[in-house]
Image 1 (cartoon, rainbow, N blue to C red):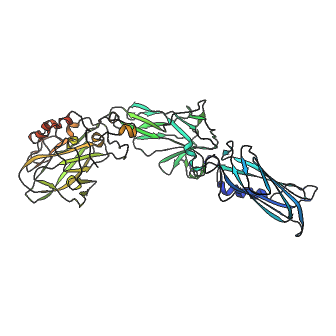
Image 2 (image 1 turned 180 degrees about the horizontal axis):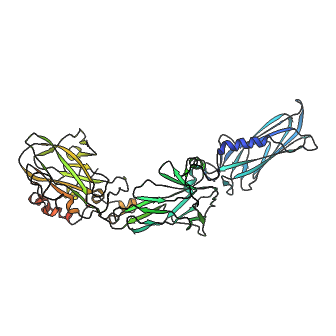
Image 3 (image 1 turned 135 degrees about the horizontal axis):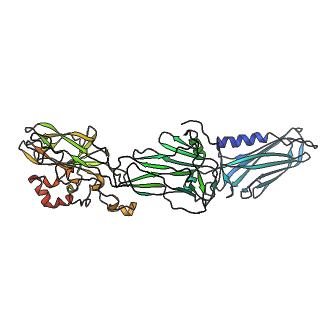
Length: 544
């Protein structure tokens, strides 16, 4: 990448340059004529604001301006019978309005006459500017001041204004990007991207941008007018592109943008890559000055179409092909006499073949692999603060009794939930996530009725209201874990772990099938938790 900006600056210091340039031009009078001239200076500028803006909104339809004319070079006591000042803007659609009694406004023209004035005077004329729909933001509009002091030759002073895009103009641009389904991990797609100017103003200059901060999607747009803005955002500049209201542009087939799925993403899972189109306003130019543009030979190109409207869907949705992960949890044995303080190792692992990735809730954005624990009889969890919360190495857990949360244990294949812990939101193939839960042995009698469960949060959601609020249903969140039977394992106290586990008499297994938990879980299955085995879940949810 190289740092120089290859695009031509459009708005550099627009407000300051507008005033300074106009003033500088005002210092230059017309060439000397046969009739004697006074020294005349003139400038026109926004009044009480730094810039003019296009658009017919409440904020921009009437903008205050001032025209200042100074005449000098005559005798101090010379009186002029009349001074005629005319100011005109080279845009017939713009309208001036003034309350100055010496002036008459007609369209984009001010015509002023001042009687019996000192030859050395200053004229400060205030008026309102209503930009016409034909004014193009970021393009110069020329103006001309003609000053005719009675008895002296007229002086013409030219200048220009630059109207800017209002801050809310970006909402006038709609973007649409195509979607893809059944895309294999590691495959690449090239979305069709189009945008439309749905507003009422024409603005010169366009910025196309997107965030590139996902480890599951990589976007390629190595074009000379694109570059990195502040690490994770890519910006592409089109300083000459001027979409008129109602026009639709599409990404050229000769300059595609490609999106590649991660090599080991699970599926079916929905991934989204958003794109943003905005007019080049003052902030946009400021941002472009920080872009490190790519060193490339080709530009990204948008082409005008003959369409007049598009759907509004500013993100490419990619649904990955089926590719399960397999989360499993290890059974554990706790040993100790009554009153002994110890820990329960909680170990979950992803057996693959895909990375374990949790889906975010469409409302809260939260998503993780939740770990629910049913403690064996004679064991109590310890270390919680008064709010029922404990922070451990890499996670935190909550006491369901202290916090008084309501969780349906059937969602996790348990008879009850004593402790709920946050697992990771991602666990790659063959990776483990582990922590030690502090507990106290209250009764040393052997027991084998403890259980530990790991579930992706999406597999436990209550989908009531999903369709109404987000247009989604349970069908949009299929179970991706390829084997739910090893998501639950036994916990025992001073006894062998049913089905095997990490204790004396350990058996060669890392988890316990729901169908072979044994006598300690028979009551659970008899009570109807077999719905979990049949993958019918999500009928109730945690209340937090």
